[in-house]
Image (cartoon, rainbow, N blue to C red; front, side):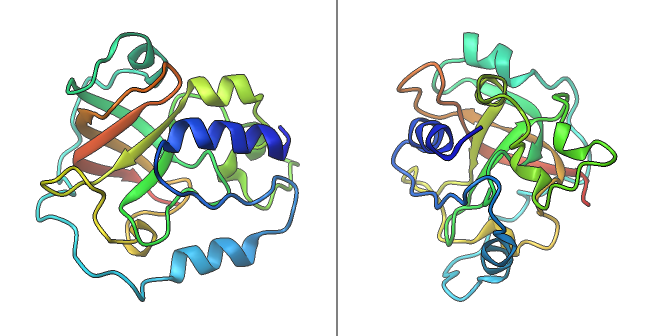
Length: 188
């Protein structure tokens, strides 16, 4: 997948959100480290109870939801944090996620990908079908001013179950879940 394809997908999926993308194939480990460690401008905290103690059951695959879900529908997705070199939006409670059951060729033995969470070895059409944005929003529907990368349980490649409501769907590719509960199943 080339960088132009990354940019087109990001514009569609992030809607009005700004997401700084790294380039596939470039060494961007310092960008990722900066994103993960940047907590200077967090002005609010995550809502109490956002992290669940028990795994919700019966998740629906993202590709299925993209075909049927409408804004406001209650959903549960089973996902991995990733899909971009920088899956977290700086200073906002927004992250990119990928369907957990989708294979990641960047994780096969012998592949020495420095950022396997970006799924750069996956064909762009496959990634787009399995990609979603997760937000934690305030009462006005705006993402909280919290960098999710600073949450000790959320890291690239963490496996999650996310419960929430479907956000605006400006097109069939965009899929946003406004999270009401997150269960961290596995963290790398």
